Length: 327
Image (cartoon, rainbow, N blue to C red):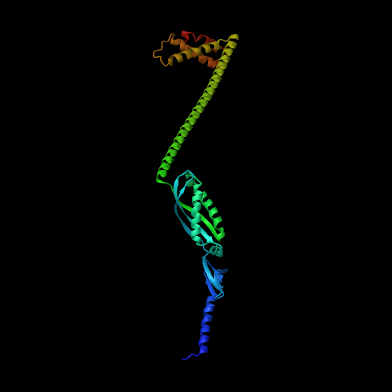
């Protein structure tokens, strides 16, 4: 098969057209931006999808990842405000928001961010003492984020997070901190124990005070009751004496006999129920006691109206007569 010159030129032109069309179309994947340069100068940015460039005039400059990325900050030594040397490392999260500035404003973006972060870690942590450094890690992260993000903003980069992973003091400082913590815990334990003893003593004293108050109130109430009982007893005795006096004034001796008999029987009862009394010597005849009891019975019948006036005369004879008891 023989091709003439015209066919060869047409074939070359066709191949050239196909290559040109392929060079015009650029497919940008999701999460990336492509910069377009025209004769070596930045022209525009291609976003995800299909993009067109002018062949032989425009070229793709840089393919920038727009997703959030992470940088591992290596361990470095930091001298704190109180001259303690510690070792610290961290992690940096950032995201490119402007592909053109991230490409043409800084060379080696990752290297620049890494050195910027390490420098600010030494600056921020060096302005704090060791105790604050170990207990205020969140504050360190916030200060580092604000400083590094402000410095990286002209590069078209947004620093989203900076975290200090580990802070390692020297071994001798770790031992000293352990002894300090132990001493502090022992001090707190002693304080709590003393506070508990003090509170217990206070509660015990309050309880004793309350018990004494209640006991005093009980004694007061008992004394009041005893006084009231004695007062009523005195009133009863006064009423009995008054009744006997009125009976004597009227010439009735039955009341006198009743009062004497009651005292007589009560005296024998006290004598018989004495706790140290083993033998009872009766200085009177038992017949008289029986006659006295009979007189009390006659008085009771007279009070109930069963004996009439003659019962009183008989009662006057029987309490003190031995013959009446014998009869």
